[in-house]
Image (cartoon, rainbow, N blue to C red; front, side):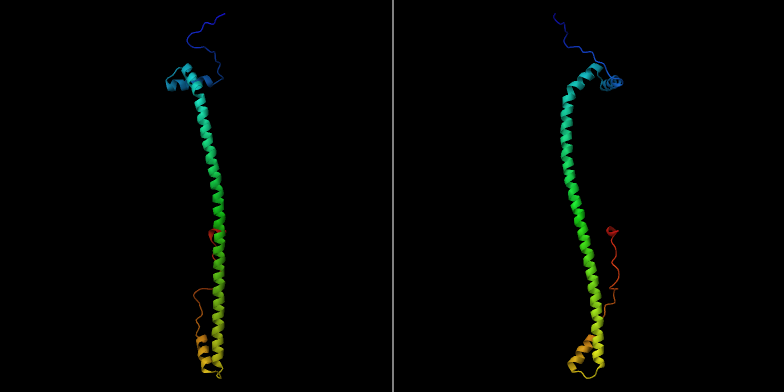
Length: 154
């Protein structure tokens, strides 16, 4: 038995609840019939899948860049922490040197004053003692003052 078909094949379609209304609204918005809207969607489905796959591939690429950036950021934070630790250690060393300098200055001055009190010394020793007794003691800052804590240390 021969089939009698017109220019296009017909197809009966049942829509799930709510889908028919959505297709109708989209068709009206685009100025098409529901039939034209369904055909347009079917014809463009593969293009949409390809576009989705391309977008997905791009997102995957960006995720890899993001992972690389995250690991680099973590490395930079660790490096910054080491630099802060080094700076704090240098400041502590500097304070220890200031304190040692102050202690040595006090000792040298005291030694010079003690030598000058004992009168039986040569001229050279008296000149040396006079120089030692005039050593200035740094009183500009308290050598044992506590280190200020930086915000990142809390």
